Length: 89
Image (cartoon, rainbow, N blue to C red):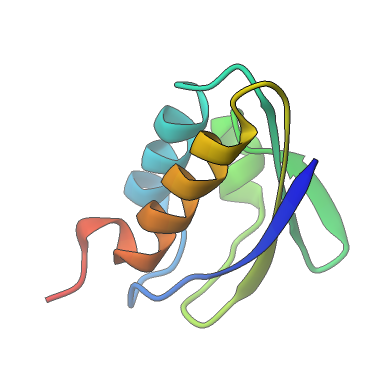
């Protein structure tokens, strides 16, 4: 299992479009991928779970990945979050 810290950097936070990108990215991998925020641990492959985090700009999350492709999955999620889900100018 690997963990890393993620920060929501886009101005609107994890609204519908970024949440869909998180789920799409997570579902490309066979590993279990979870996000932790404000005491909640959710499955990153579930759109409803990601949306219910209600993580705004500046929120710090913990990413946990476990499985045979965990390194690639962690790196893909880190890139997605650091790019602001394509919403940064």
